[in-house]
Image (cartoon, rainbow, N blue to C red; front, side):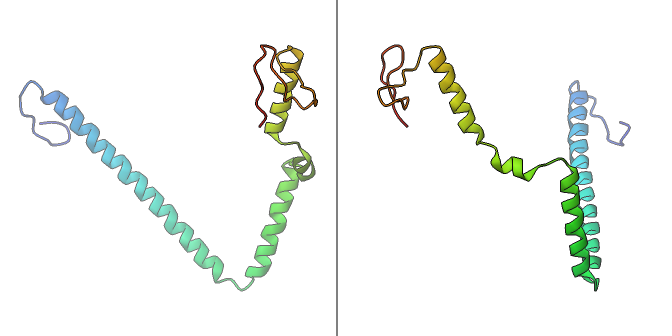
Length: 128
């Protein structure tokens, strides 16, 4: 008999089979424990929301929450003006790549100066 109460078969492969069975049992118990934890948290959240919705000062509470979140945003160091005025990331990468290719002589600007010319090896550059 094993520690968990199962009988052993006495065959040569029973140890490996027992290990596989224990791992399978443990996996099922892990999943069941995780589901139980999630359901417990969900029940707690539902209770909190229910008690929140029954408050008579819900509007004032929402305003307090809004002010608190704005204050947290200010203290986080995030600057919305700088974030809006920042150039697009991919545009910066494209400009850097074009500058590097021009510096290395692998990109001809073309007659119009728009970069639609030929590459250094003579192949035609396709405009996008």
